Image (tube, rainbow, N blue to C red; front, side, top):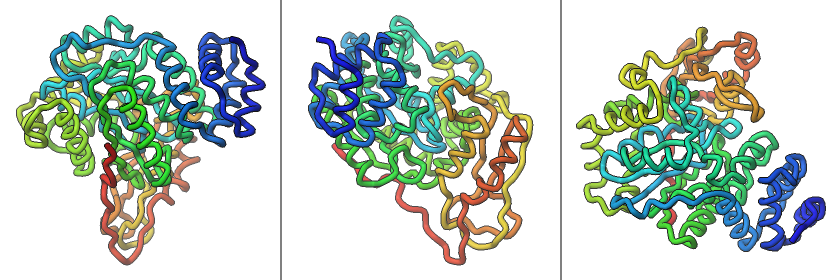
Length: 432
């Protein structure tokens, strides 16, 4: 059956429900290039403004999932468990988490994404390692999982190709926050992995793609429902993203911080969230020990060895993991200093994420090229005692003009007052 894209856009614009056949036709026609990007941009905006019914969302996810291949790892004895984050500023959790869990005997066939807006992307971070290839064919993807128990790649041309096109379009059209588009994007890729279980890290707060708690909960419940409806054990944690995770915001610098975690150090919030998500992944896999087992994988060096061997399997320079100082670093640095004394009461993730993006650590347009060495080291975070002249952040950049354009705005990210404010909870809610 053939439909008119213009009529479908108008129907969704006016709040009408699209039929399953219409949605399948739209996704197929967009994937094949019959529906151009400007029309799909209009449809994405209509979906953002008017939402989708459960029937529409089911059809959209299924159409995206079946636009390509669906993997089958049923021949592997180990449990196949993955994790996905909706994205946040400084969110590098997948990078230490996946090798820690894989070193405990879980197979992790991880399909990740690129940065959306001011939120960092796992693939962009991994590609800051020289030679690290994230674009794999299905056979390569499978062979790395079978041999190493872990792969960290993007969706191939044959895995949910409809999502790949729409994912890039959302970033450039202001439609990233749409709950139906987020949910169908994530779950179409994840269901294509042949998983037994999935843990979702749904961010909420100023640095999240969905900032309001109630909408974050709605997104979490939507994705958990999609997972359960497709026979995949799915759990979501709603986690805070009002200030950046850890201290590093960027790409190569976030790899360095991830290696710190694998070496048994690193920021407390990054460690806590890594262990909280890893504990659920082991629980889903039926592996006893929880956090103690995860800690043993770190202390023994097994987790770091796993990351090194997987880096090599992806063609990456493992020497940069053994010695993270060899990772890319932008040639220029500057600092943001406090002009008042007191306690840090706020450290706005959104402001910091936007500044990092405009320095080259992210994309404002889908064709923008990432600068792997650009980034921000967030020195002062909520609860810290600050004196006049203390460093709030160290900035690494390549383009001086870009930095000068961001300097004043970045300085507004920190609110400093006389009363000490305790950092809020990191994990806010669990949804099964």
